[in-house]
Length: 209
Length: 209
DNA sequence: TTACTTTAATCAATCGTTTGATTAATTTTG
DNA sequence: CAAAATTAATCAAACGATTGATTAAAGTAA
Image (cartoon, rainbow over all chains, first blue to last red; front, side):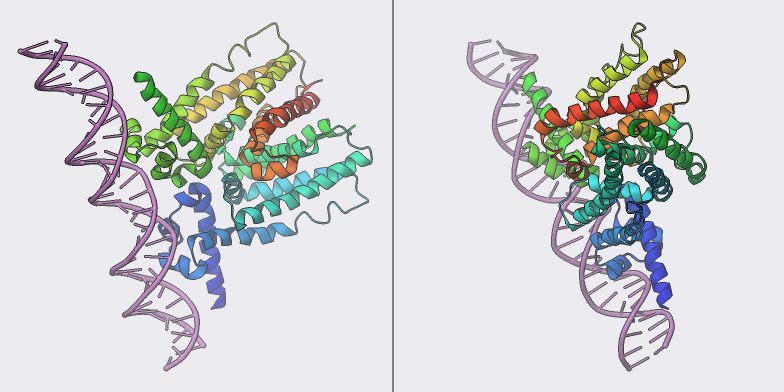
């Protein structure tokens, strides 16, 4: 069945996403990925052409799902800038912290400054999200809600960076926060609320007049 | 001369530090490292035993230099907590942003959750630095300088995370900030002051009563 | 059958490491 | 002192293992 094929490809992508994020691109061998996925090694090349093709497919599957998430937020004229910020933080906290496996992989790949199509695609995707945030902040300054001397790029870096630090270095953040970040239940019940609450308080204090 | 031997080992470590940070542990082949360092491949094993030994040596050289930097700061009773915070931000901005090559390597390694001695060593080293910051924040709360409801672990994550985000993903932060992060001159003249100024403003707004 | 999947076997390339030989420097010996 | 012996440093070449990729044959379903 066609459905089976898609499910199997998706299963491979799931496994590949995890293994890549754990070991990095170079550290994750095709034998390990195919082994953990329970398929023959040649299937990876059959389905995705090459290891790099598989790597790319992992990203492209996600990129599509990230596309239209942050729309219709910067364009809502009736909403105040700070309300939009809070909504952004909520969405960001929910959507992004859940997909921490992919986020790790994403920023790991961005860290390596490989010069290829993938890097450019990823950068453009992330910059699109960033520009939504930028729009909100500019609007807030323009209408007097936010202080006019705020450093917009740094605010963005703080928001994304704080989350990345916690997600990407659980070995550090777990003892820091006092609970295990690698536990999905802890992420849901403790980390998400804590991140959201903190980011709101932090930015409220810094941004608002 | 003995000095020549030390200099050559140090040269290899310099090159290895850069190549590892650019390509990651798996991506950096011993052939590439030895080639860029201008030494024979066998010298790496001769001096450092193995590739992992070389990797470890890169870290151990730095760990020593990071050891006694943040001392005598949390212990100065005459200084107010906020003044300590400002001093910490100054030192952190100066010392750490300059060594961005090593910082990248450091957090890249922390991200991979390899279970070995190195990971534990690195975590302990970083947690020592963190604890200094923690001490200052607790002191600030205790003497009423800081709000009592501040989230200490998140403040720490924000401080470290913001810097890491900028340093580790120059492909993102450069278009965001509007200048090239990979340019050492730009780091010195623009990035350092901007990070310091922002972190002070941000934390001042969040922490102080 | 025919077309699509899946498999085991195998490929050349590259990996980290080791080797034996050679040179340079240092120490020991007479 | 000079000659001999020992140690340290460096090199090209090759090692076995593993990498990503390919092949041809076997299996499966319509």
